[in-house]
Image (cartoon, rainbow, N blue to C red; front, side, top):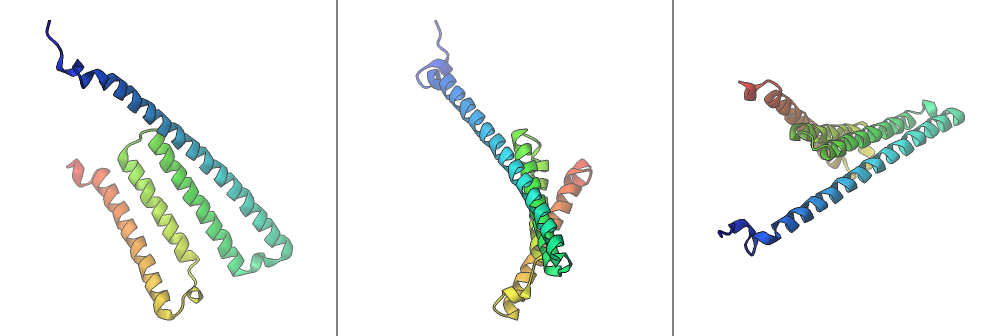
Length: 163
Protein backbone atom coordinates (compact mmCIF):
# COMPACT_ATOMS: atom_id res chain seq x y z
CA UNK A 1 0.00 0.00 0.00
CA UNK A 2 1.44 3.37 -1.02
CA UNK A 3 1.75 6.12 1.51
CA UNK A 4 0.87 9.69 0.84
CA UNK A 5 3.84 11.97 1.59
CA UNK A 6 1.42 14.50 3.10
CA UNK A 7 0.42 12.09 5.87
CA UNK A 8 3.90 10.83 6.79
CA UNK A 9 5.75 12.12 9.86
CA UNK A 10 5.47 15.89 9.32
CA UNK A 11 2.19 15.78 7.38
CA UNK A 12 0.29 13.94 10.12
CA UNK A 13 0.30 17.12 12.19
CA UNK A 14 -0.95 19.25 9.30
CA UNK A 15 -4.66 19.06 10.17
CA UNK A 16 -3.86 20.03 13.79
CA UNK A 17 -1.79 22.97 12.59
CA UNK A 18 -4.53 24.05 10.18
CA UNK A 19 -7.15 23.82 12.96
CA UNK A 20 -4.88 25.75 15.28
CA UNK A 21 -4.37 28.49 12.67
CA UNK A 22 -8.10 28.67 11.98
CA UNK A 23 -8.73 29.04 15.72
CA UNK A 24 -6.13 31.81 16.01
CA UNK A 25 -7.76 33.61 13.05
CA UNK A 26 -11.13 33.40 14.83
CA UNK A 27 -9.58 34.90 17.98
CA UNK A 28 -8.12 37.76 15.92
CA UNK A 29 -11.52 38.37 14.28
CA UNK A 30 -13.26 38.49 17.67
CA UNK A 31 -10.66 40.91 19.00
CA UNK A 32 -11.22 43.08 15.91
CA UNK A 33 -14.98 43.01 16.60
CA UNK A 34 -14.36 44.01 20.23
CA UNK A 35 -12.12 46.85 18.98
CA UNK A 36 -14.94 48.01 16.70
CA UNK A 37 -17.37 48.12 19.64
CA UNK A 38 -14.82 50.02 21.74
CA UNK A 39 -14.59 52.60 18.94
CA UNK A 40 -18.40 52.85 18.81
CA UNK A 41 -18.43 53.46 22.57
CA UNK A 42 -15.68 56.08 22.30
CA UNK A 43 -17.55 57.81 19.49
CA UNK A 44 -20.79 57.88 21.50
CA UNK A 45 -19.01 59.25 24.56
CA UNK A 46 -17.28 61.85 22.37
CA UNK A 47 -20.54 63.00 20.81
CA UNK A 48 -22.18 63.33 24.23
CA UNK A 49 -19.15 65.20 25.56
CA UNK A 50 -19.12 67.57 22.57
CA UNK A 51 -22.82 68.25 23.09
CA UNK A 52 -22.20 68.98 26.78
CA UNK A 53 -19.27 71.29 25.93
CA UNK A 54 -21.40 73.22 23.44
CA UNK A 55 -24.28 73.49 25.92
CA UNK A 56 -21.89 74.73 28.62
CA UNK A 57 -20.37 77.29 26.24
CA UNK A 58 -23.85 78.56 25.36
CA UNK A 59 -24.80 78.84 29.02
CA UNK A 60 -21.65 80.66 30.13
CA UNK A 61 -21.46 82.88 27.03
CA UNK A 62 -18.10 81.61 25.77
CA UNK A 63 -19.71 80.27 22.57
CA UNK A 64 -18.62 83.43 20.74
CA UNK A 65 -14.94 82.93 21.65
CA UNK A 66 -13.09 81.80 18.49
CA UNK A 67 -10.76 79.54 20.51
CA UNK A 68 -13.76 77.76 22.01
CA UNK A 69 -15.26 77.23 18.55
CA UNK A 70 -11.93 75.93 17.26
CA UNK A 71 -11.84 73.47 20.17
CA UNK A 72 -15.31 72.24 19.11
CA UNK A 73 -14.07 71.77 15.55
CA UNK A 74 -11.01 69.94 16.89
CA UNK A 75 -13.23 67.59 18.88
CA UNK A 76 -15.54 67.02 15.91
CA UNK A 77 -12.59 66.16 13.67
CA UNK A 78 -11.31 63.78 16.33
CA UNK A 79 -14.72 62.10 16.22
CA UNK A 80 -14.40 61.79 12.43
CA UNK A 81 -11.01 60.13 12.93
CA UNK A 82 -12.67 57.62 15.28
CA UNK A 83 -15.29 56.92 12.59
CA UNK A 84 -12.59 56.39 9.95
CA UNK A 85 -10.65 54.03 12.23
CA UNK A 86 -13.91 52.18 12.96
CA UNK A 87 -14.56 51.80 9.24
CA UNK A 88 -11.02 50.49 8.79
CA UNK A 89 -11.54 47.90 11.54
CA UNK A 90 -14.86 46.86 9.98
CA UNK A 91 -13.17 46.52 6.59
CA UNK A 92 -10.56 44.24 8.17
CA UNK A 93 -13.22 42.17 9.92
CA UNK A 94 -15.16 41.78 6.69
CA UNK A 95 -11.91 40.90 4.88
CA UNK A 96 -12.72 43.69 2.51
CA UNK A 97 -10.68 44.62 -0.48
CA UNK A 98 -7.23 45.99 0.31
CA UNK A 99 -7.76 49.10 -1.83
CA UNK A 100 -10.69 50.17 0.37
CA UNK A 101 -8.65 49.63 3.53
CA UNK A 102 -5.74 51.66 2.14
CA UNK A 103 -8.09 54.48 1.17
CA UNK A 104 -9.63 54.50 4.64
CA UNK A 105 -6.19 54.73 6.20
CA UNK A 106 -5.25 57.58 3.85
CA UNK A 107 -8.51 59.41 4.62
CA UNK A 108 -7.88 58.98 8.33
CA UNK A 109 -4.43 60.49 7.88
CA UNK A 110 -5.81 63.42 5.89
CA UNK A 111 -8.46 64.14 8.54
CA UNK A 112 -5.84 63.90 11.30
CA UNK A 113 -3.49 66.30 9.51
CA UNK A 114 -6.27 68.76 8.67
CA UNK A 115 -7.23 68.65 12.34
CA UNK A 116 -3.64 69.51 13.28
CA UNK A 117 -3.63 72.36 10.75
CA UNK A 118 -6.91 73.80 12.05
CA UNK A 119 -5.72 73.93 15.66
CA UNK A 120 -2.21 75.04 14.69
CA UNK A 121 -1.02 77.91 16.89
CA UNK A 122 2.38 79.53 16.35
CA UNK A 123 2.51 80.47 20.04
CA UNK A 124 2.93 76.81 20.95
CA UNK A 125 6.43 76.76 19.44
CA UNK A 126 9.70 78.09 20.84
CA UNK A 127 10.31 80.41 17.90
CA UNK A 128 9.12 81.29 14.42
CA UNK A 129 11.49 78.84 12.75
CA UNK A 130 10.05 75.92 14.73
CA UNK A 131 6.49 77.02 13.90
CA UNK A 132 7.38 77.41 10.23
CA UNK A 133 9.00 73.96 10.17
CA UNK A 134 5.92 72.37 11.75
CA UNK A 135 3.61 74.18 9.33
CA UNK A 136 5.73 73.02 6.40
CA UNK A 137 5.70 69.45 7.64
CA UNK A 138 1.91 69.51 8.05
CA UNK A 139 1.54 70.92 4.55
CA UNK A 140 3.81 68.28 3.02
CA UNK A 141 1.97 65.49 4.82
CA UNK A 142 -1.46 66.74 3.71
CA UNK A 143 -0.35 67.22 0.10
CA UNK A 144 1.42 63.84 0.10
CA UNK A 145 -1.63 62.04 1.45
CA UNK A 146 -3.88 63.80 -1.06
CA UNK A 147 -1.56 62.78 -3.91
CA UNK A 148 -1.52 59.17 -2.71
CA UNK A 149 -5.33 59.20 -2.47
CA UNK A 150 -5.61 60.66 -5.98
CA UNK A 151 -3.16 58.13 -7.41
CA UNK A 152 -4.92 55.22 -5.72
CA UNK A 153 -8.29 56.33 -7.10
CA UNK A 154 -6.89 56.96 -10.56
CA UNK A 155 -4.93 53.73 -10.66
CA UNK A 156 -7.65 51.43 -9.35
CA UNK A 157 -10.88 53.11 -10.47
CA UNK A 158 -10.68 53.15 -14.23
CA UNK A 159 -7.33 54.80 -14.72
CA UNK A 160 -4.13 53.30 -15.98
CA UNK A 161 -4.75 49.76 -14.63
CA UNK A 162 -7.97 49.35 -16.60
CA UNK A 163 -6.33 50.01 -19.98
